[in-house]
Amino acid sequence: VQLVESGGGLVQAGGSLRLSCAASGSTASINAMGWYRRAPGNQRELVAAITSDGGITTYADSVKGRFGISRDNAKNTMYMQMNSLKPEDTGLYFCNADWGRGTSRQLFWGQGTQVTVSS
Image (cartoon, rainbow, N blue to C red; front, side, top):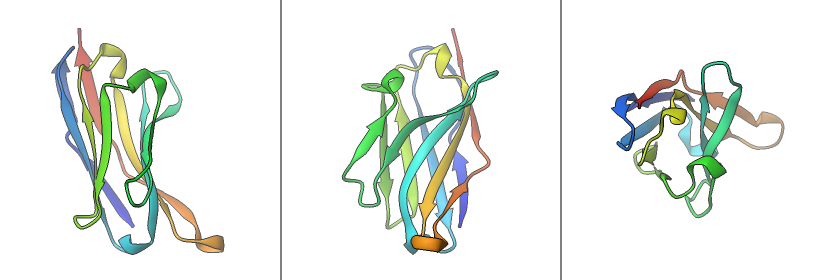
């Protein structure tokens, strides 16, 4: 599975961005997916995650009420709408996919897309 993020950029505080994560390859075996970010000097942290059917979502406390994760399985694409952006949202955003079952199960990661929020 290959994951390619897009949609990052430079935005002023209070602005919005929509990230996309396009999956290709053996996408039928993708289970849950998630967005992570790594801010300068910090470890990578989970921002939001979504189950395979999109029925359950989870968010980091810092983004609840501002970010929305979704997926379109027909397009093999996951999204994250980011509103009311803050300078502390700055970072490299990665998508990941939980793939397969049992001993074949593994995680795939994209290369990341940079989000920079100016104050």
